[in-house]
Length: 212
Image 1 (tube, one colour):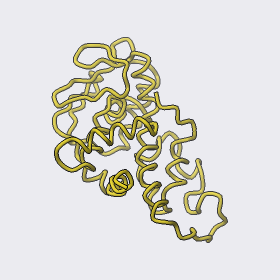
Image 2 (cartoon, helix red, strand yellow; image 1 turned 90 degrees about the horizontal axis):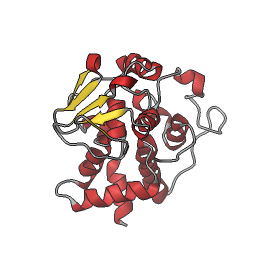
Image 3 (cartoon, rainbow, N blue to C red; image 1 turned 135 degrees about the vertical axis):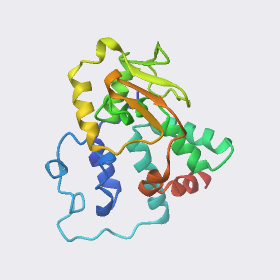
Image 4 (cartoon, rainbow, N blue to C red; image 1 turned 180 degrees about the horizontal axis):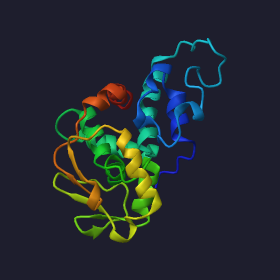
């Protein structure tokens, strides 16, 4: 389990520009953004203060950390995922994002069964999730097309799951997932759609950073 203890929204906020924080995926959505922090000013800066010019390395590092923090992955684990993506055929950036999207904890979050990825990871670790009718407690498990992920029957009426389903109505539908909220089940019907992720992340910076 990734032990990243700072609030996820504040982590991303410290790495992103003021125009990058409007996407719901960056935050849990449990509380309005204006209740979490002042989104119109830079963290630790007075209103109107501009950022200092950053080095090229700093920009590359922040792009990498933004991806890593959002998915809640430790540095060593993220590097292993990247190395596997670099060895695979095709675009390294696309392979990296696909691998992150197909993690079991991310799928539980994407399906709307958890309000945050951290909550999804805890649900998997505590044995509340089954994959293809088998209980699986490995958040980093990589799912495949055709896999069926479901919340265990005894856990379906838990308050956190019911609350997460309500929160999921704020999110856009994932076209590559077939979600049956009534049965607490999601089927991976296609490869993850990466268009929106390329808008959120500068994944080419991650590739450039690790290629140095």
